[in-house]
Image (cartoon, rainbow, N blue to C red; front, side, top):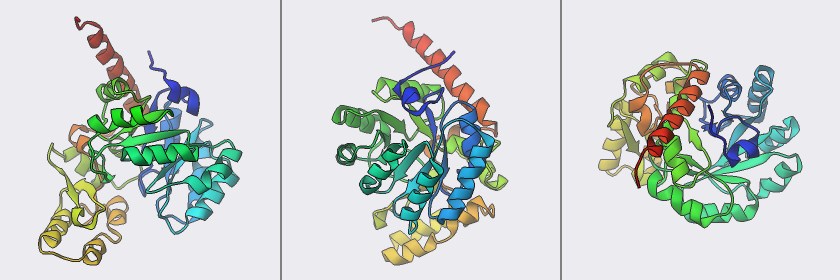
Length: 315
């Protein structure tokens, strides 16, 4: 039982599933477990200094011999040095977010690293294709964390039609039904973040996992719209404080100050009231903690079942 696409060939993986490179959440342990289960595990570099990223890379390499990646946040103050570490460590795959990785593409390609860039608009997808990235990850606004303005269903086919490189779908994917939908829209695989927060191998605070498992269909809300950099999180006292500040006309500086250190408070300290519980709308579908292999096996099994049902549809 399995589903093979060009993404599997491009990255040397068994299943067309990429784990989202979530800052503070996606450690070497999680990345290695996802890769061992046949997907592509990704370490989230976030704003971490280069030696911290190196430590996570070496940790993942000690736990798996399979391909894994590092997500590079292009607005990080350490981005250039993090790229240097990735090149020195010869990481097989890089995913990028929050910008254009163009100036780093030649050096990464010289070491054989595959580059996949997260995009939320058609124009950015076209621009990044011209820089030479190997694929783009079309991320709809259903995702957790920083979001764009376009939902996955209309975004993915538009980007598929606009570029000639492979497109991976992200945002709103929980199981095989999401994978099959993404394939139907022209994508060659999916990136999943929120579901892996509740993986057994994910090292986030147990309170964070419990909050995701307890989420309902309207629990994932958007904050920071007035700043131009909206973020989807689980509703809590911090999220309500954000919304109140926005409604009262607080400045962008004041609003952004509310979020300082909030992700760390959630992930490390387990503060579910004033921590930033980044999660996508599929949080409502996550109902238990389970190993990465079990998550990926369920995605593939349910995808095959969905394809079987489609095979019975009369035309």
